[in-house]
Image (cartoon, rainbow, N blue to C red; front, side, top):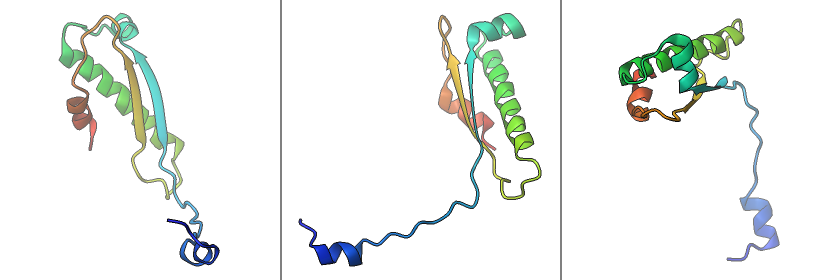
Amino acid sequence: TVVEDGESETQFRTEPIPLRTVRPFMFDTVVLQKLVDDAGVDPADPEDVARALEERVDSMIMQARAQCAGDPTSARLPLIRLKVDYTGFSTINSQRFGQRVVS
C-alpha cells in the first residue's frame, strides 16, 4: 500500500529511548591444539576438553565482573562468546556445553 503524506506524520512517530544499562560482552578464541599443549588437556576425553573450556568461560565471566566493579547498574551477567578451533579434534556438543555453564 502507499502511505499518504499525512499518514506518515501521524501514525509512524518514533521516540528515542536512551539506554540505561549495557550488558558487558566478552569475546575470546581458543585453539584446542594450544590448549592441549599448554594445559595438558587429553584430546581423546571430551569431558576433559569441556572442563577446560568451562574454566575459560568462568575466567571470562570473572574478567567482565572485574571490569564492571563499582557500577551498580551492570549487575547482570555478561554475554560470553567463546570461539573454539577444533582443527584435528572431535567436537563436543555445544548445546549441552552451553547448558552446563548457564546459571
